Image (tube, rainbow, N blue to C red):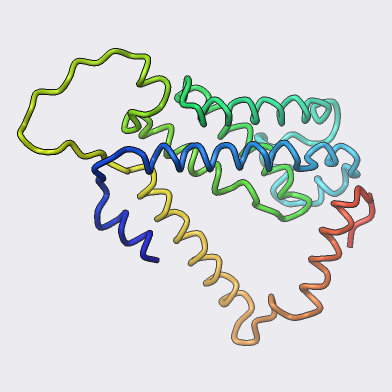
Length: 216
């Protein structure tokens, strides 16, 4: 909570290092998670699982099983490359946009079956960082572009942290409304936390990650 309050109450810092460190950590961690996540297992699942989800037939952004799914490993590799480019700060406008779109697509496909939103926060970070990338002077794009020094104003230069500030706000809202939805949907009985319900969720995910075609 202190981290959120600090960046909202004081959105500017005397050094841009915080934003650069956040960019490197988030992108390299996300690249590792994407590279090791079994997205390719979606090709082995029956098409009926996709079609049975009410979001699938009316959402053209999510490709259904078939010839398109054979491109999943290439899409996964492209995301890893783009995340690595954002991490080092090269071509961040293009690479952050491509990574966010492709990662949202793969996450959407995965959500239809496994109900996991593992990479949702990474997508939000990429979008916000792409919008406010000019505020990061330590990215490679800024370092290789010559700039005229700003006129001296007699005070220490400070740096805005808009991407981090807005990301922390989005992060807080996601978890707040998720808790509200669970409380409202389950009522005072908190049925979503019932032991039998949790058992079914764990069994469903375990079967998927063991590359089994059967689901609960």
